[in-house]
Length: 153
Ligand code: 4NP
Image (tube, rainbow, N blue to C red; front, side, top):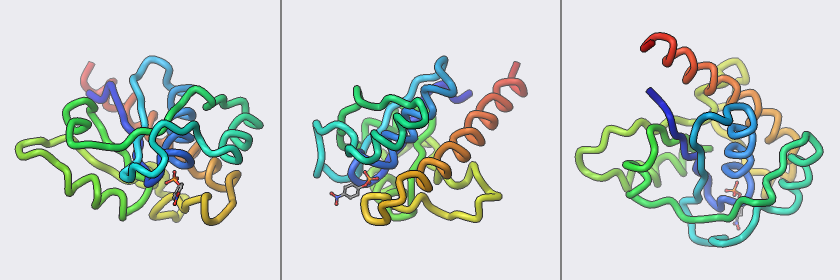
């Protein structure tokens, strides 16, 4: 059963904190966190334009602070969710021997979106489009987690 999820992108200031904030709003009973595969923004709050776009939808992510993903996260979380293939590869490169913690792309949970990664709004500047995709995929992820729970119960 999945009880905790960590969302991972490159900087941990745009995509993954947005996914964490959407997830915790939609699934308050589950544990969640986010991290970046780089250390570029460690300690920083989410990017201003990302925060503003989320707040316009009622999602406050101002309390979040960037941290770097590490091998210990494989034991700390039941599921690791990456925003794109590059970051998925960076995560897998840190998998401790013997760990079977699943790592999936967020877009795996939005198959009808046609997207195979969450484009980085730090470069695209499409913060609303990013949030649309994140909200859709996080909804799919929560539905799957809840379905798994019903199967187990
Ligand atoms: P994120 O976006 O991975 O979604 O947090 C980025 C933020 C900053 C940088 C790259 C990606 N950067 O190059 O500083």
